[in-house]
Length: 319
Image (cartoon, helix red, strand yellow):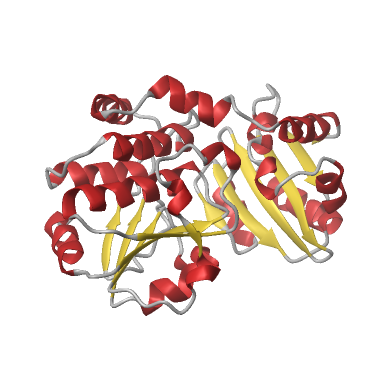
């Protein structure tokens, strides 16, 4: 990786925007906030932070997250430099894609193996645990100052994309880097509390309802939950309240593959998949989605009940 190109490009840019993927998670948001502060601290420059969808409440603790704006609010604005973080495919920026494409220069920071290097400058490491880890590599290679705010963002990315350092993408080097980020100023106990122990009551109630109504197939190897718009209304749930349900299903001892279907409208269903050893990214790709080997997602252009049948058919082909 040509780390100097990162430094030179930021130095030359007069206007900078950082973009997340749609329905942002801890990695894309943590990396976005970390990069925002790294640019401010080391280059004395401001950057706009742009997201698509809704920022989950559990990530409102991130330093300067309140400065992030919905992509629709900045539509049409032109930048010298656009930086996408944790965006596997550039169409995952959805509302922010026009902002990214119209920039004079584009940087792509990511860790998805399926990333096709869509930026003018690409920092993509498929073996990294998260985009935050890639940003840490860049900062350390350039001897940039990593202040407390930057450390909090990177640690949040590391923590959440490894499932609290429990997933298969947790390696010795991951923990070594997490330790360094703590030395830079991250508070591991407090960040963990924000991410895993600060859920809104209605979110917990929705999760409980989903667990009670979960369905199991093929000797309990497949576990699934279907969430309708009526379910969301019943618990006054925000879109991000479904986060974590698919992981809860995977934790069941007999489960090999879990999936959650969420109704978008009468003919559109969003799917999240998890597994213990099955490559669910291949299943997601059947429906035009993708992701990681044990964590993937897609959108199915069918009503939720038909989407469930089609998903079961594809899972059974690989089990």
